[in-house]
Length: 448
Image (cartoon, rainbow, N blue to C red; front, side, top):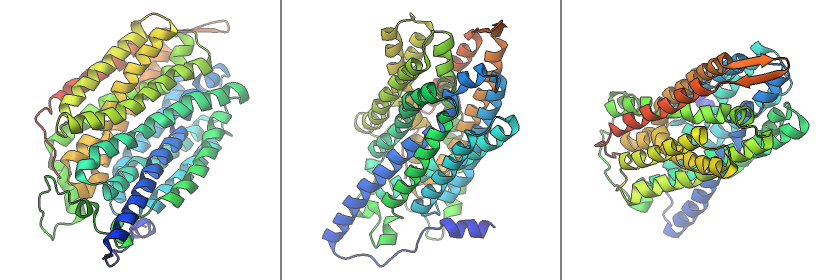
């Protein structure tokens, strides 16, 4: 079974290297652009298939389909399967042809969303949303493996920053586009809309992506760019699996795992429960709540790009100083969102600061920092190790948040009211802990 899976996804053989330098340059320029389009727009669009549940929570609660605790169970199923899948599929991605790897997974996650739109049974929802998480877990390691194959060491921070805008693109499209769709057509379209988008995205990714440069007769991208920065030689006999397992011996990786996990608590708290909070605590409609959250995603696009640029250019590819700056910006934003006045200008300011700070941290702690300190050939495995902790954190958040919100919910007649105080401090405390853990890696430096 394992051999069949490896064969289905396996990367192609290296072709004899092209000797015409102008042809090499032409092919690199063409495919590097296509790779960035595929992994950034493709991952951004498929992200709507992951976040759909957060948009339909209030309609599902109001209709009596699921309670907050049940929605927390459904949501956590995605995060737990995503966590395991990101580890296993991260290791698999280092051996895979990204064209097949990503198109396959995007198709299956789209089908899970389409099925969710027909379902109102708890156990089936948990199963479908868990399967959705598994297929979603192909996306991030696949994107990073494609990126590291086509972009060299000194380009990595900026390329990763551009790719990280995919999260914000997907979040913005979900909060505003899917939110409006749900407001007009009902909660089922919160799943059907992303499902249809996912099918089109899978086709587009298959058309745009190529396998590794060497499978096209090209040299490695580092050789093409003459970029061997900090590249340490390794024994020729060392296998890919041996390099993957060597990651587990790096203490900094384990600290990064915890720092990323606590960052993901806050990240998915806002993604999963932010619309409910803005509707119930601040009194906004679903489209307006989605619009406010979309402002954080727009800021997140700037934050992802800015993090890569600032850490590369101002700190010589050192991530810890930029981590601290972006963590403080995120905490300031959270303070304004939860404790500032209930006015649109204040909330927009808080969302902008939160989005910029949080996405910068996700860019670093959720992958870039790990890719920096792990051998480049096993970038997928590094993403997988970080990912399993990140999404266990997100899954625990979903269950704890759902339980705390339901505990603070009171129903008088047909009117529900909420006390969000305890869950807010849970979210903020996680961000503070993440900042402290990341700061402990201040002296950790890049390696290849």
